[in-house]
Length: 297
Image (cartoon, rainbow, N blue to C red; front, top):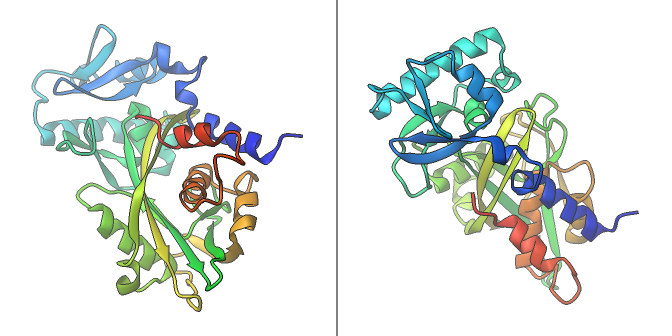
């Protein structure tokens, strides 16, 4: 039977499977906008985009926009029209979960956006997605750590019923990281803005995986929020069905169970490393864990 460490290593490999031998990476085309690579497109998606020569133009191992689509607005509108048609045809299962939420498309987070794209469609183009995750925890006078976990609603489009970080959400176009963090804390866990503002940014977790719905290069901005010992989050917008308050060792055990949403398990693993719950002398895969949490997108 696999050990905790081996199970965690398997999870990290699964969440970085786009980099592993046998992935579709070798056969993917670069998706370029204004001469900059912003994603990867699989041969299957390419074959369908070929129906829209007024929008997409292949050249060599790259797909870009047809001439005339040379502004932020024109690209965003043209792609949205294509996606709406594919949605009506039910060509791709990922579009069934249409969000009406625009994500910014850019080569790097620090770059100005080159266009907007519907969140549900980003995996078809392998464009980077950003989110915000909050570790809500307490520490008593003896130094004992406990963590608040959320259980996702059964109506969630992805990973319904799985364990999650106390608050988390995607970074919508035009929203700052801190604004998103405070908003998700308030909406999902009824945490007052004054308390949420005390959360500290502690870095990012990044990975790229692929599955039947496409390619997912993702970067999560991570916050730690130390909560008062007597504080209790409450269900807000219905995206969460329950909150649990567990000792950190129980949280660690749960990470490798099938109960946890995988990228949220990565966020907690990062917490365990930063708070020295996992140490290099006692964890043989310490270096692999750190590397697997911070893959270049």
